[in-house]
Image (cartoon, rainbow, N blue to C red; front, top):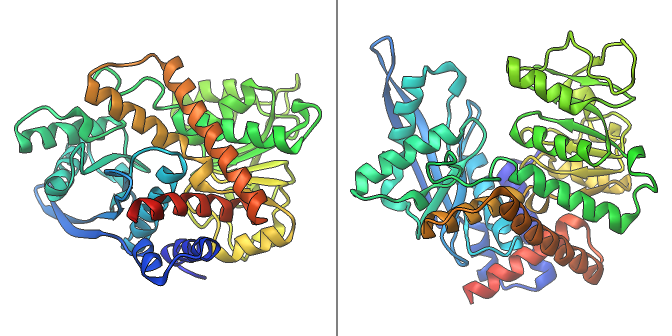
Length: 418
C-alpha cells in the first residue's frame, strides 16, 4: 500500500499531465517549501519531563500565506503531515481563497494529558514555530485532537512572543475572543452544500427522504453534516465514533442522538434513536462494517486510509463524500471507480472548513465580526462556485471528480507560480 504522501504526490502528477506542466513545475508542486521538525519538552504532573515530537510543514505559498491545521494525535508522522500540507495547497486553491497550504502535528494522545500538560504542550508548539508563522506568513488552525481552547492558548503565547496583539495569526479561536460565528459548522455545512449540488446534478432520488446516508466519524464534522442532512430530510441509517457505531435501517433521529452526546459526551448505545415509533434499539455496528453497508451516500469523516484494497470490494455505496482527509488509499480509489462508485474528493468536499477559516481571518484583520448567517452564506457561495468549476473540468477532460478537482487546483497554483 502506498503511503499517504505518495498517494497525494501521484494525484498531483496525474493532474499535471492533464495540464502538460513542465517537469520543473511538477517538482516544485510536489516538494514542500519548508519542513520543521522539533521536540517539545513538557513538565508532567508527576514532576518528570517528557518530550513530544512535533512538525510544521509549509508546502506552497504561491497564492498567499500558508494555511493549515495543527493535529494532536498519537499516530501522527512526518509522512502524514507532508501529505496533509499538500492537500491544503490544493484545497485553498480550489476554494478560490488567497492561501497556500501547510499542516502541523504533534505525536501525542491529548486525552492522556491533564489540562495543564495540554496547555504547556500547546504553548511549546508555538514557541517552536513562532518565527515562521503570522497573519501574512502562515495561519494555523485546529485539526484532529485540537480545539478552540488550544487555539486560544496558542494565540496568547504567540502574542507574548511578538509583544503585540495578533488575533489573525490563528483561526478556529473561541467566539468572543477573535473567533467567528459559524466556524464550528463550516466544514459540515460545506460538505452538505457540495452533496446538495451533486444530487441536483445527478438526480440521485426523486424523493429526498429515500436517500440513505452512513457516516463514519461523529466528531465535529460528522455531527454537523449529519444534522444538516437530517434537517433536510435525508435518512441517516448509520453513524459511528471511535468506540463503535449504530445502525437503524428506518433512519436515526439525529437530533435525539446529538442531545444524548451533548449530555454524556458519548453515544449511549442503551438508548433508542430510531425515527420510527417503535421501541427496538438501534443495532450496534463497527466502524469497519459501517463502510460496507448498502447506502446511497457514504461519508468517511474520521481519519485517513479507512477504505483500502482489502475492504473496497465490499463497499456498496452509490457515492462517497470524503469529509476526512485522505480516507481512501490509491488502491481503493481505483477499485471503487471500476465498480462505478463516484467519489467527491476531500479537497472539494471538506473545503468549507478552510473557507470558514478564511472569513475568520478577514474578520480578525478588520476587527469586524459577522453573524453566523452571513458567514454561512459566504461559505455557500464559495462551495457552489468550487463545485461548478470542478464539474465543468470533469466534463471538459472526461476524468473522475478527483482528477478534475486536482486539475482545477493545480492550474491556479501553477499560474500564480509563473
